[in-house]
Length: 178
Image (tube, rainbow, N blue to C red; front, side):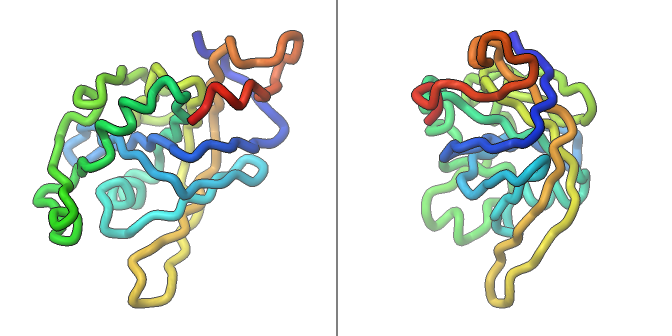
């Protein structure tokens, strides 16, 4: 069971974030990524502009950052070489990526409605952060990388990882995360 909390600052340490966004046809895209860091109520994401996730985020201006526990490593692995982009970009195809329209199903994860935005949360993730796009910073050419700032607008935390007696604390045992 998740609880909505309002921590004073966000400071998560996780090597993987599952980002859920909406595709142009309103289907859901779910992608693992590893370049994320938090500052106050914002998160910076480092991603390639050629990804479906970035295209969705730039168009829809919202996403959910789902932080998986180590128990979900198998689900993250099932997503590793999948893309929501069809056709698969050549550079991704060359390293084994395949198009998959149903990433939630393939990863065996459950979509859960969000409160303030349209993309769903991942029910199995102990931390779910609803976010809206704030700014995009391009790196110098020839790089396709973008630094994407999102503002966290709603925090959902599994009650089992909250500190006892702390209404809005988001500290938990580090061993629960990847």
